[in-house]
Image (cartoon, rainbow over all chains, first blue to last red; front, side, top):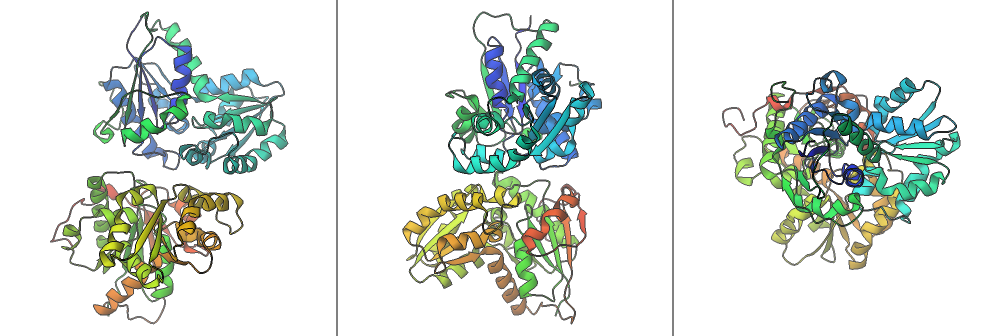
Length: 280
Length: 280
């Protein structure tokens, strides 16, 4: 039993879709969320820079006394070297393994689509992980670089013509290939899942990486006997590297409800940008 | 006569639209371009950080032996304190003054529209500078946050339905106000000027801040007798703080032609982040 909070990081606001799922799956847990809104997006930056930023984010979360870290950010997940995260002295998960596992469980015809930012797709990480766990599946990947700015600018209504046009273009090749399972490999995408679902058809299973990560985090904490032991529901603390007001304004869209939490600003560049075994 | 290069800086790639105009207006000049692609965007950062970054960018350009510096970046232009740039021992210009001057020259009915990123609009800098130079004009501003991602993702064809839809929504209020002059207050926007022009109508003058800065730079160099004296055309050198390959891939779109230059990576954090009279 361990009442310390779960740490969740993202390059911006998308990771809140993972928080939304954590609140459902692990309602008793406290959560500390860090969104690096001052340096978003990570997807267009080099692996070296992303790794430095991610380590600063993790070191901040550790300074808040978290018991585990979820990188609810596709770019961090696929960029942080395994040799580095294997050294962490706390439970850590990205979104990759949990998501891939959920997709393999869902597929019937073995044809799996992956949509994500250009950088995530370029790493080939989803494809490799899917093939590693099941070499028989066929994977079809498509970068959807405009989905993040569209979501962040509120183009999220199910009938939004701009987002539907963009989505039609992105999803056409995946529909043509006949995938029966589609990985939403970016934590922003669940916000427009209704549009994606309309276009893919209801027979296609959409795999929400935030939900998959939340389910996996629950298993990890159970296994290590680190679940919170309190009776009341947990609390959330939100930290960002840019305007707290802007974050608070848009948070409800990602959390899928109303937002009334307190948001604090962090000088994230003040945290170490590398792994130090003594501090972790 | 002075054959040293002109230095151009931007937080990323947008400043290349100023380079495109410099190549037309001052074909004999050498140009050194620095795009801070590893720290883009500047627009969301504090004034203190932007000033430090800008000074590093300028100190890098000076290390390349430039004779003048153009900040082809709206954020640097409006953030760098005048008290600081007034101390520079070399000709310096941002995009604000040249652009505002061109807009005031173009308007007939005194109604001027400004489109830019949300951050630039929020500073109110264009509006203030326009009113300072001519208190009689009326200014109508509109942030267009999706234009940068649309341009960066290649949604730039004149017939692109997505960009046209988004632009229609952004520009409708400016058309309604009857502006006869529209400032493209972000160096990405000239790439989609044909779409903006179609929607505003040909009677509306579009003011390209890159072109305005290039025209102004020519005047400055003429005035100070610093124009290049060679017969052949000048050469361009490109430097970035993140992936040179990614820069090279997208440069043609901003330059409005093909791109075959060499791009080198710079460790920009190694340059002084403040003004030193001895080095400048």
